[in-house]
Image (cartoon, rainbow, N blue to C red; front, side, top):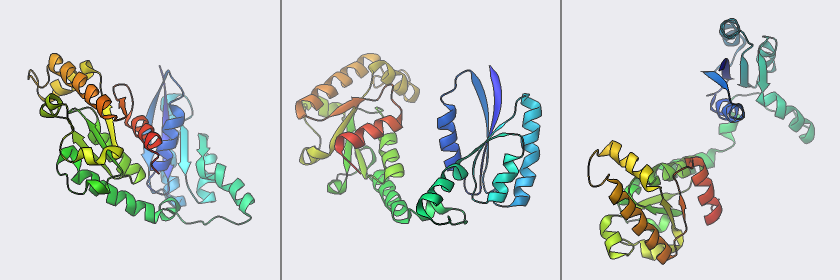
Length: 268
């Protein structure tokens, strides 16, 4: 397997460069990528300090490194473009045609992505606080403020999905576990029946659930494969009976799960 070094270089945090860069690199199998994130490279001097690392990577790998950059300064971008690396200039690629389209010069200050979404940022922070405060059925108070309420057996992926919806989209996502008592009664717990239109279920393959639970409580009845099968079967029966839409989280990433929930519940 060949090895290539990838630098994610930014005059900000580097998160945008890394996120998009990794999405692009995911299309190429058989290559081991050594990732280096270099945030706050916001001056020519800092860029010059970085260049020896780019050169050293080329010598070590035997192939030119990849530089994925989100940098506002044309001078700094040009410095990396002349370094001999393969440069993916995310800002330069898109800002120039947008500038022509809008008929105006772009702002030359860093951190613009964060400044254009101040209200959205505060919405996400509020949603995170809400989701943390309504995790795992800790309280039924304020359920009417939820955008969506995730239900499912313990360890089916409710908490990470709730937090992802809050962090990425500002969605107030509560989650509530279906415990054995609920499954024996074949009834929704607490106030959930009053918020049926907000409910969305997660299920999971019993064998996967067995492995996940066994890491937490090895050898317990809670983690046994027989109990996992029983709980999943009962939970799916309950959700089907109550008309709750649900999906199987077994082989899906949290990003996929969240996207499917957003689409089904028509959340924005």
